[in-house]
Image (cartoon, rainbow over all chains, first blue to last red; front, side, top):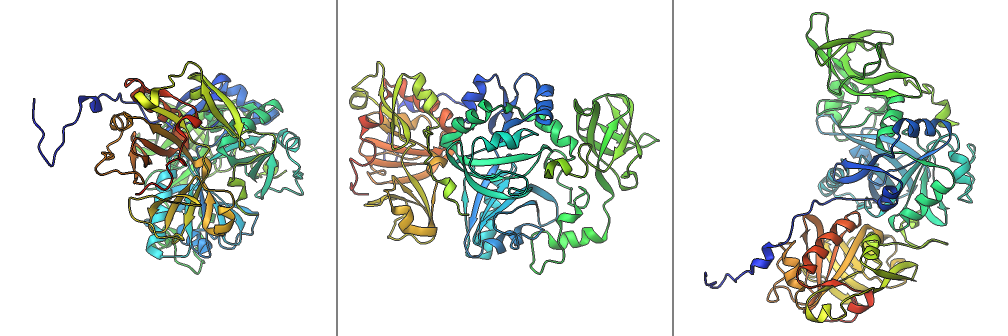
Length: 392
Length: 216
């Protein structure tokens, strides 16, 4: 036995006896979703429902009636103070200080090098308050990113991380409006609650922030509310007819709209220009912003590769990462996402291809597991390309 | 439009702790108090656990505010301050958590305060083996000679961001991200049960107010 002498003290062996457990985040309705036969997998540091046993059926339900997905994992930041608008204008390449209260805008964040690091939505709550969502996987890093730059710029603004404090669900589908109308006094008609509106109202008795946005391509409402009511609101929506759907059908649905998942369809070299989002960069902004210098350079030098959609000619679902190759066999790009769409009856995907091939109808060759497959390029969403359904 | 939607309080809905299912599985009986479903008894609970070994109680329902900017009172690094508003827990010079915030405080603090009650889970861990329990899952130094009542230790708890408030000689409150509720219950339960501990109702540990005013 060793005798402990100051400044050290003896440590009982018991302190070493704690068993290791894997830290896992779970949303407030996680337990209920398990009861509803959710197939749960890791998604970053969260345990999430990938599907409820029938991913194709769940995706179709969103098109034909209504579905609800738990999106509580989204990063959620409250940015407030007289300098809040300026902070966001400096962090994002688009303008946010001119956003009207009660309106929502999409935002892509870039690094100093103009590379995409995250995306999400920004809802202006009032003159000095913004509600910012981030990707699920990027939530912690973006909260730090906001904090670092806020300290550097010394703006009169505060950032509060509400990621774990608020539940969020996305109710989507042609029946979504009817379901929501049965749970709130808010006028949810298309005229009163338009696409990209943000409103506060009680849903199933719970005070909530509602944003009319549509990652999955149908009329949709993202509802954010205190996590302590997670099961209550989830149950109310399901009882009214919304079918739970998981991450897998969500990935199919968003692919039909060519909505990007940062980190999957983009990598550390992707700029908004290459990712087919040049419209998000406002180089005519008066303020300097993160990545401006690099993005000015990128605007003057067209990207060599571009993110596009494609359909497979033979119905093969290529592996994510499969090579887009040239006639001589050399690599030209890569597949980032691919799924079979039950709605479209086709295998669709997204890939980085040479800019010269980024045109509707262009033919590309995808080499997957040593076999070549023909695919056709499209630059417009596969589903509702004009966004008429989304805005209806 | 403001951010009032952050404040728990709903018509016809009960607020639930992120550990409610684990407490229920452990035999908890619940009552609605202040709009929250609170464990008021555990079937077959060892009533002496807190005196003999260690016991833990879910305190997630306690109101919590994040106060931005200079706090309205002097706060010292590493020390919590209790006053009539609740427990002031300094995170940085310009960011403070107010735990067990009393009614009306948020309104009085105005725009500086944001309700973060549901952002954090909370467990009160008490008993002669409370420190021993914590030693199994956190490196925060809670030895009596350096962690007196009133000490506030933000840091890693069970490998997640959190903090521990020393409420009394053998009573602590641990704060952690609400989404880690199930995980944290599992960790604390595993550590405490090996020491003869068990869960108790919120009342059993008198939670945080009984020892209020103890020196930091």
